[in-house]
Image (cartoon, rainbow over all chains, first blue to last red; front, side, top):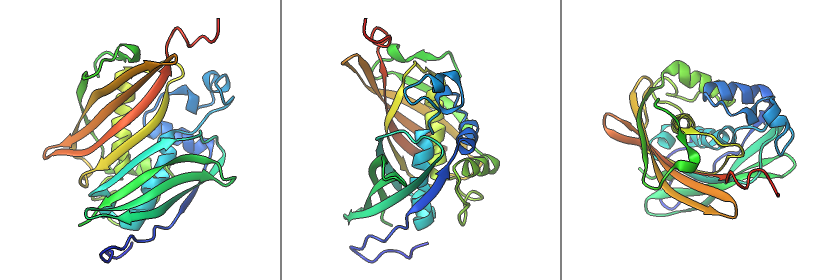
Length: 134
Length: 140
């Protein structure tokens, strides 16, 4: 976990990569009690626009939150914020990397631009993350 | 949970809830397993994974409304105001912030708030859209 940042410094946040396969999507559907059939091997998913199940957007976003948790620990739980838009569906199996690029501090928060991409470079989500300064 | 609301019947300013919830450490471990995440110092024993609070809020929304075919979750924000310990009694409340219809789509934004005994502990806003029923069947 990073030490408290010096004034004006936005600490580096290490990227996080995870494999999202259908087994993980199924576990997420159970853990999140999400009944949406487009995430499972169902007729709705097969007949949908992608022809197969897609991962939950919140499962992809979880990489961003985990990346920030690994960087800031409880500080992320005590004042973290996210704002994202999903740009494309994650279709399992897919290897996804979350990154955070310093976007500058202000008087109150550390700010980052965040994104999740596939190993082919497809953008799955982008947006911002910030952390309240102590 | 009371009867589900029709997404196409939601009105701006409508409040859904409150809904009561509780997440324990076992729930948190299941969430970490389901997101391929590792445990971090203090979590989940002392504080829940923050985005699990967001997932709880979104799950509450999914439970509260009838999900129409083709609904897309296009955007999301969350702010985690303080750590939440496993086993904390929580209350979720959802407020329809905006409703708009254009180009055959209904767009909705819903404010999400999770409270514990001290007040709001996580807040967020979900943006969704779905084809209007008349448009969902495709071109005539």
